Image (cartoon, rainbow, N blue to C red; front, side):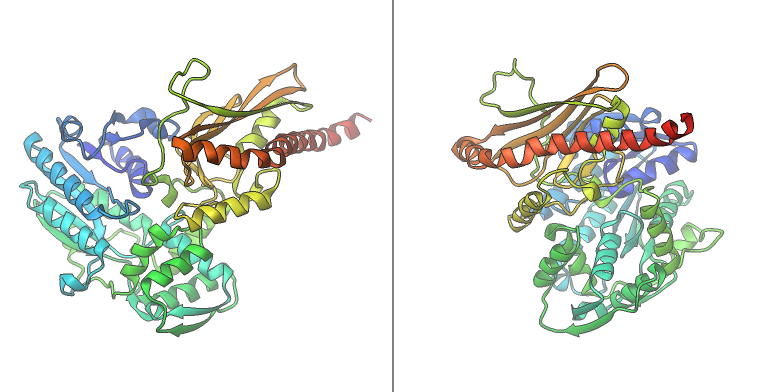
Length: 500
């Protein structure tokens, strides 16, 4: 089939596409930032259109000649007004799918408790409303409703993992006792593909869940058991509201408050599949649905092997700047502040590139890490993402990857790595490293930080932090040089011994 996939830069969309290609389907994606897909393993096998889901013309172009369409968008971090935004996007999507003669829509939503609408959280209400809008579009729509999705890099898994690993004893909110039915990401993808390929024409929602019904406390104990940790001690109390809980989750885990809040809102309500009607449309996998502990084991292994295809941070941050670095010095759009440092490194360009590409995350920033931590904490207090997003892969990057409070904008091994800031700033900021080989054993490394201020506040910000640059940027490039030279000498030592 010819299939349109939205949300291709997100967690589920980025994993679904290779499955569809393996099943022989032709895939088209629409993305606001197509460059973020350029280094995906499947990028040259799909048709990529640039466009915004809120632009009817762009959606109409994407829908042309399609047999089916996947709706995988969610304004999880859009803040106030997200319900109107989601309603608008779903209405456009359904209308343009109908006009284009699309035969089927498959939508991944959230499992909605059987409660009066006024008792649902805003995000669950919105998820349910999107499903209703798509089903009323005139295009047969299959809405798959999932609860907690367990897979390497998912927000739910990262939240569970960090809470369990970091806190052996916890005072917990009462929602840890609420029943839930987690499902492995592998099975979510299986149902998405199966729903699109099903021959039956249906227009309804289906609950999908794994074989285990448990509680969040049960999931924490289960994770600890699989990870080889001592059993966690939990003290549930009634005083932690969802709002306070989301602040607590944001403090302890990499998942920012804006994402933690809707996750917590759904956890406080029982989300257990009301039936297994999905089996009438899509038979269970031949090997069966993956049990919770097996899903955790596989996710942990993926993280340990640095084999995480997508992460929750793959999706764009609402409100974060996305414009590329302006051409400089020919750019004439206003002031650009820069901080440039250069270093000759006694190591080959490949060795230096390995150090540059691995910056951030568990490797740190090679200088004044405590200052970076303070800046990250300030960003989280201001409602930003902070440093805790870390990296998808500790050693390798690709365009579109989140990297602490940066995002990879340019990645050209072994000559250029550019990061764009997604922290809260009165302007736009970038940092880049350019490498040039000087013979076989030396490399010229150029580091440049760039800031485009926004208004008077932006200029004041740059000059207020400029004095601290002397404690950050020169030590950073020197630290990267030392690390590359150290790795070079360690690699050469056994050769020298053998020659001797």
